[in-house]
Amino acid sequence: SFLRAVRSTGVHSRFDCYVFEKACAWLSGLEGRKEIRYLSCNFSRLTLSQEAFAEYVRETADRYRLPHQVLAVEVTEEAAPSQETMIRNLRQLHRDGFPVFLDDFGAGDTSPADLRELPIDVVKIDKGLLDGAGAPRGWTRFRSVVRLAEGREILVLCEGIENEKQAACACLAGCSLAQGYYYSRPVSAAKFRWLLPDADDAGTEQRKERA
Image (cartoon, rainbow, N blue to C red; front, side, top):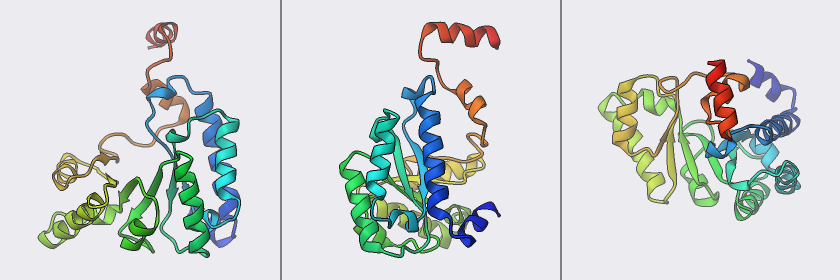
């Protein structure tokens, strides 16, 4: 896949920063962006382990005049080359107001230690845990992961919800947030604009006329 190619060629950090820059540029010009709670950008632990990472994120957000609390730094599941530097960067970003998400919890190199050591605001539960929650043992494991996060006052986001049954399962387990094809499939930036209220009445009238 494309992401495997990024990993195998060793351009994680360049790719991560390119995507973050594009995301900030897009959000800064988006009408109705006040309706967005989080814009989450994935960063590999290799990128997070770079010495100047926290400063880079802060300076980029400020250059585009974006509120820090909207830009979520999402930690991916592979191992970190320097756990100490990564933790220091994430704690600094958290102090600066950036939310921190933990991606694919329950898969890869994620572990309960991440919840203790990292300033996590939102845990995203790996889709594999949801897929197995239909069986008694799978449900126990799924609910245990949610409780583990709840015990540390961390919001839980359930990924990969594809139908009403899975949505009910996530709600019953206590997940605070949800995403998946059941709610919306991926859309282009142009189409996403139509899902948000316009910034003013004139924009609303334009949207009605185009519709």
